[in-house]
Length: 124
Image 1 (cartoon, rainbow, N blue to C red):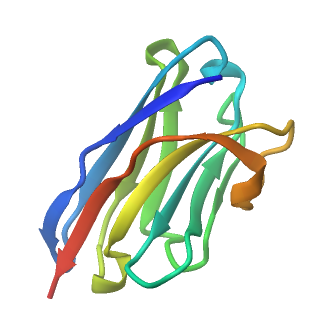
Image 2: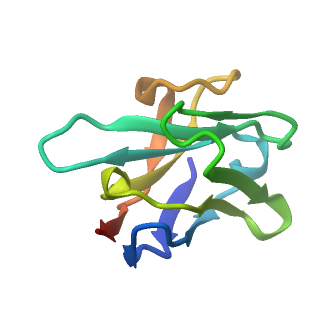
């Protein structure tokens, strides 16, 4: 199993940018599909973005498409989420997760390892 630690969250104004990082430990990171999810207060956790183990494919929720970019550095066991043009509705705790199935999906039940989350707050 892989252990995950997110960082890079914070307070940013509307239209600003943040780059989240997720440091992974364990042998399986480089062979695992990875994803970012978020959960706002009073709402269910939702899919944000996912990337295959070799980064040949990426997937995004419609709400972030064109503004967020998911990437990874397998040599450094790190996952990233570049977030641009942030909006108040992006405010949430952001979690990185490692897929436990062969095909990366947008469903949180397909992800078996989760980080503790990092808070992103977008002020208007």
